[in-house]
Image 1 (tube, rainbow, N blue to C red):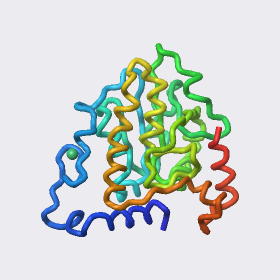
Image 2: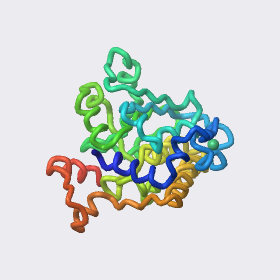
Image 3: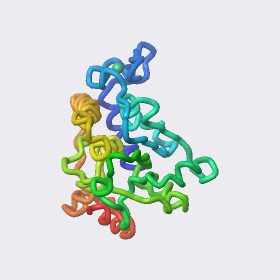
Image 4: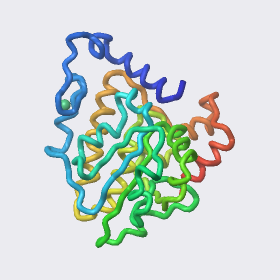
Length: 248
Ligand SMILES: [Zn+2]
């Protein structure tokens, strides 16, 4: 069982079975969450249209089992012409030829060759930002199975705040949820929208606040836990070395 799955069971304890599964549970039609934890008052009034960016998310199928996945929230913040979420195990070149051949497409994946997104943005260009969504292991699995993805230019973003998503374990203090990473990227590409970053982060903060109120616990970054000897579950040496490369 992964950390994320553990965490979901923990969260379920915060609501009674009837709250989550009972016949009387009312689901909000806009945010598709139980009314008890509705986030609509913290979402942008209408989904935001991006002028300089298309966001494409390749999502691992397991994400659908995670009711607190942040991409679901992101899809309530951005309009459908700005964000395309594709849920599959395979993303072959034959289906996404335009994407893989687009010179302004960047995969948000902080490998050794990744460029800082802020350094390359030219305001006259339209950028396609591709992100992989799943647990870190799932995202790495998608990356390593696709030579097409490995041929894309890669970029990273400077994460200058602690992740708001404190109820899910992040690998390091410098990593964040998919929604937050995209928000940082859009802060680079959509410079004429000064409130955009906060507009996207606000519903995540609210979701975390509601879950903490329901008894969820804060998680420290996993590398910190390992360094402090607070967890027996270690990353493999290979995985740990890879995570260290994320700390640009
Ligand atoms: Zn709602």
